[in-house]
Image (cartoon, rainbow, N blue to C red):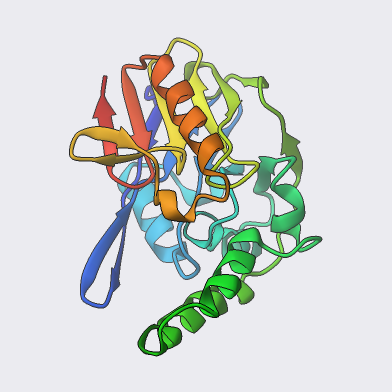
Length: 231
């Protein structure tokens, strides 16, 4: 395969509204790396998308998780159960929340917000909390640090982009061919913006991370929510 990366598309329907997310597959000399993996229950979609792009799922060597939100990590446990050789990598800051050593920060935030929701929204809020309570702890094979360089995608580095969560990471091509934003930026109206700023765990850090992302002037920004923005 000659591609340096491919962009997958996963589709979900909530209350008759379709939501699309865009995981990325990076190809290295010895690795095939999936960046983020969708909600719990996404295993078949992932397998179908990989095969659509002529990638056999069993050849995937690593999954990199940008942060602890369930739409990014939900399918990791079921993938690992079916393909146990696949390694799971994540930020050293996010690792305790992913492994179950510490309580997921998004769940903590949601439980606090639940107390303030009007009565008609409490059922929805409880469903949201329950999704996070049902996440299975993940064994992280390798912790990632900002500045680490890999041969994936023709050469890339891990960059810290905190704010949405404290240990959020993004992945930048060393040649600025692409930048995988995770939720440090989303694509809205052909513009990169902060993802759900009202839910950012540190809004000031989120603003700084967006400025950092834009400063690279990459040829393409691949947003988990929104798709691809060409620079």
